[in-house]
Image (cartoon, rainbow, N blue to C red; front, side, top):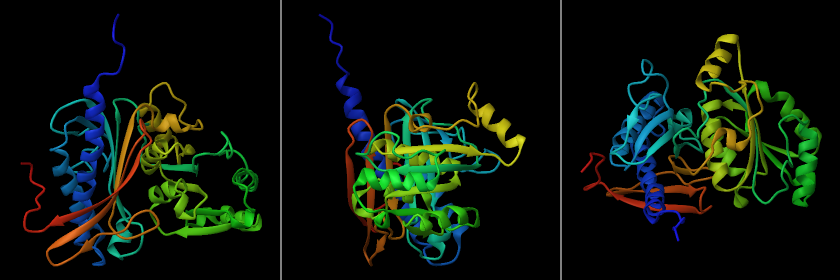
Length: 332
């Protein structure tokens, strides 16, 4: 009789990769933390990118960056299409080496470093445009919120599903002029609004965490960040929908070329953005709703990271202590 069980080698590799990813986000966070509060967001971002790229060379994958720092002529490292890794299974990579460059530069909450992995072909190839997004957490009825429904209906349905007054529902969104109507209607419905200056990946994840005091994330932000958020939401079995927003036909045509045969204007479900087996890791640079920031001490630094796997649904928070006298990002 043939054995149809999944090979043990893949299971072990998958688990090891999840923990290897933490080292990648830790490297980027430690490098960028040198610039925290110094008002130099480009230097902070550059340090994170370089450290993350070096750290990837130690990870046992044959990786291709599909969500990264831009096109090859726009970014020297972690550009779309760049090959990374030390060799292994073919994986697609989505990265934001420093989400919240302004937050880091100003020492404000919620700057994080982010990486997600999926089996080849399972991430939406998202151009650098806006995406309309809505996210809620796990253990809720399917379709409890919908991108095409009014925010008032979504809030009422969510309050009913959570068995709590609408006055206790907290919606998180970016503090932008384009969200004025969303904010006004949310408050008119009786719910509360938590405004962010930057960093919607962390906010989307927070909507899925019981201890975050965020019930729903909504509004428009970067499409690449939407894919990273979708990877995290997959791991915790939350719900998310999105739709790409285009300023002109050139952007729409680019999205069409990146995803042949797909309607670029379609409503995207969670599995349209991040399918298959997904791994996710984030490390805090500055303390926020999701993660504590880097603590730099005379002899070492302390990191706080989150790592998740969609296959098992396991969520781990990891505290790392890094000795300055021995720590290196050079591959050994």
